[in-house]
Length: 273
Image 1 (cartoon, helix red, strand yellow):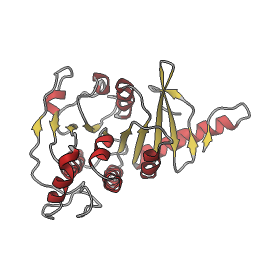
Image 2 (spheres, helix red, strand yellow):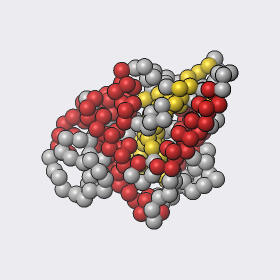
Image 3 (cartoon, helix red, strand yellow):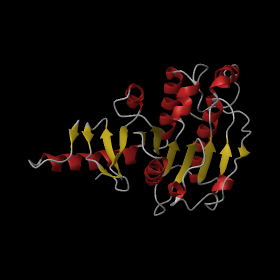
Image 4 (cartoon, one colour):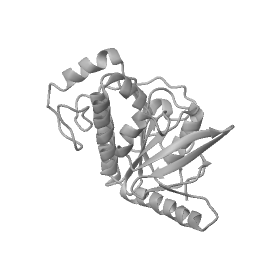
């Protein structure tokens, strides 16, 4: 990949290429893989930026494994179901395979997304929602009421996420480019509960569900860029965002797949341009 920087003029071209690549992702829908082992607070800051600020209308879906640091939701000012959905999910490896098998035994329900089938985790199939309000700290107005816990296999989580995306699109009367922002934190839990092909299919369908409404989503994988799992999952995504600590300073670097361009290392609060 081409990288930014340098003193021979190539850095200018790379910078323009990065800005163009980011604009393209915003205009046509995209999914990002966020990698690197950094403190939770650092990831929360990055995720908060990717979820969008309050200067424009944003509809958001967040899938988390536990209560997120408050900084993640600083710019969220609308917590009603028409605007924001928060799901908590933590797969139990001892029961997920059996639950998945039982869940795949029935094909009943309406389809709300692509790529569903008896062999995949099934984002897009519907069943009884059955979600109960999750306990919250109340530190952020509206967060405790918005967060629900999803108990059960990945298929059930997939149903919730696929349905939420479709419902938000219906509420909006059709979503504009980058109006929908999606965050998925549970890749580690997914990989611990299921084999790699199943996790791959789940994330493949999730990414496609985001793209079909021109949304922008990001998926967390706390692994190095050169890790085997990162290399396995990276082709599913339009870009890989690499996080690191430079001393005490958190930084990010963007690798755009189709544009074949990489940004310089940047502060986490500064988008590539």
